[in-house]
Amino acid sequence: MRLRTKTFTILGITMIGAAGLAMPAQATIGQCQTSTVCVYKDAQWLNTSQVISGFTSYADLNGYLHDQASSWINANNSTAEVIGEYRSGQPYYAETLSAGWTDNNLSDIGFNDMADFVTWA
Ligand SMILES: [Ca+2]
Ligand SMILES: [Ca+2]
Image (cartoon, rainbow, N blue to C red; front, top):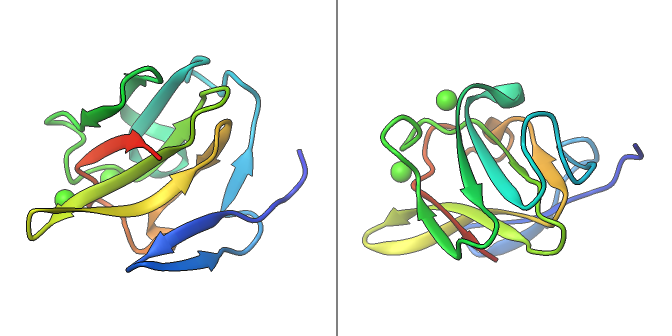
C-alpha cells in the first residue's frame, strides 16, 4: 500500500494533509465490509463501531458513537463520504474520505469525539 495525501476541509479551508494520515485500502477493510462506512469509538478502528450502508445518503451517529468517534473507514467502491457535526444548527464537514480510504485517528484533524453524522460527500 503506497502513501498518498488526503484532502480535507477545516473551517472552510481546503488543506492537503501529510502522507500517512489517511490511506487508500482494499474494498473490504478489516471488519468493514464493502459498500459500508464504519465509524469507531477509538482510534486505530477499535472498540464499538457503527456500520452505515454506503447507500444511505445521511446517517446520524448512534448513542454510542455520538461525540465519541475517533476513527473511520469508507469501504465504498465509488462514493466519497463526509464526517461532520452540527455547529449553531449548520452542518460542518470535518473530513472527506474518498471511496476505499480510511482515517485511523480523527485527533489528527482536531475532530476527536466530535462527530454527529456521516453523509455523502
Ligand atoms: Ca473516541
Ligand atoms: Ca458533535
